[in-house]
Length: 460
Image (cartoon, rainbow, N blue to C red; front, side, top):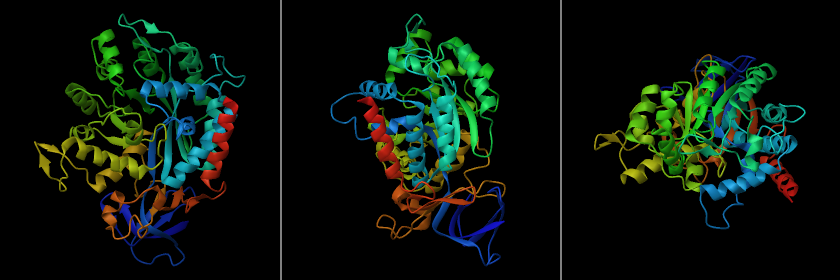
């Protein structure tokens, strides 16, 4: 057994401390006590919060940061540059990028990640000799870094949907994302389940890329393939064009189409959900579908500000992701949800204040729950993201006296801190990052520099 002493800790009921937490050899919390029961307990500094869950990641997009801002454009022009990067990636380059990005996530306070993975095959769509080479690269990267991984294997079949419901053929650059049919995706997913079984650090999930990329009948095939408790994620209403195309083809919104096929449920997470109707919000809430907001990406790509407040008020679980990794900072993501509400409402409300019958303010406690327990449940880690007996001891220690946090009250620290204030990251009772340095791999910045240089050198 290992014991840790925490001066300030965020438990489900709020801020407490000092406390001691006893952890078994598998990294599971077995006791939480006050008082000096363990004289040799390891002291964890600062404010200790549960590790954050990054529910939406495209690891290879990290190579685009700081390289796509030289000209005006839209989400769709950005996407063409992303495709150009995807063209040159090999399993080895994906491993290098993912290892560096996952190390950056740990240093920023994420202890779990959901990888929305659609880069399956060689350019042109031919499978690798090892058909699981790309999955293996991501699995190996997460294992080497020590982050919990939910691999959201993604079905991607069409470039869009025509008004007569005819799928638009994939472009040359999109072919490597696709298995060619829902049946072939289903066969490969079942094989992945055998090759990469779930364990203490890995979950296999599934993803419907979007209703534009997955025709109606293929949605049914995906649902009949995956187990009832498998995490299922889907891009939803990220762009108005997606809504327009779906309405033209099906006379339904993307939310309505997914609901009609039974794809919305407590195991489902809708990513972005930016452009929703009132009916969409009610449908998502009634089905208990989670919503993964990625505010820094949504701002970077000019997607818009999602209706987090209305969804939360309706009973929808909210969580966060870093998507294309314009930033990797869970504190920035959760704080952006609050800032988005202020921008939409034009009001800086006191805690609990109502305006026109709706909440216009998230409390720090709610923001922490979005980033921790809600996110982990979205990824299939039902016990993680909270400091309770039986949960894995995954925590982040936030500095309370940095230039950003000095003077902040501990229960409001998340409104001041950034990823730069992460002193320690602990996964399964092991300190894996200390003051920005990974315990075996060194500084993530060095890994990132090498991986990104390798990727762009290959492009030349």
